[in-house]
Image 1 (cartoon, rainbow, N blue to C red):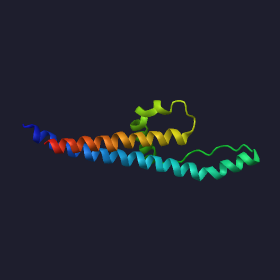
Image 2 (tube, rainbow, N blue to C red; image 1 turned 90 degrees about the vertical axis):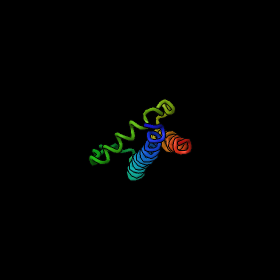
Image 3 (cartoon, rainbow, N blue to C red; image 1 turned 45 degrees about the horizontal axis):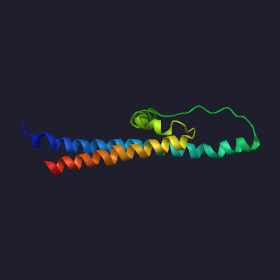
Image 4 (cartoon, rainbow, N blue to C red; image 1 turned 30 degrees about the horizontal axis):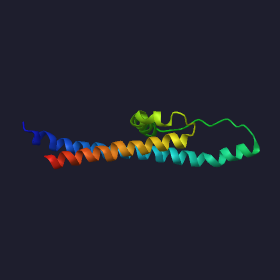
Amino acid sequence: MTATRVLFPLAGVLRVASRIVCLIVVVSFAIFAVGQTSTASTHQVDKVSETTTATQPSHEGAVHEAIDEVAGKLTSPFSGITAGSTSQWVIRGVGTLMALLVYGIGLGYIARVIRIRV
């Protein structure tokens, strides 16, 4: 089998994988952001009135949990960048940005190089 027959489909697979990974990471961050902003007002009211209320259990669906788990594994190589931070916004934001750069731009670039060379 020639290199052209092997590399051409590989470029397509890399391009599709890049898009899927980026979609998963962006959806996970969007779910996180919506969850954080929806509980922000309740949290602020509790801070102002200095009352302690029990936190309600999360009712995440199976799809939500699966997306978060996969996104966590995809962004875990970049966790060292935010190791000293306690802000969930910084941790999730930097992880998402790095995943988009590496998986989105990086894999997309490799796919384009393979297609050009073939």
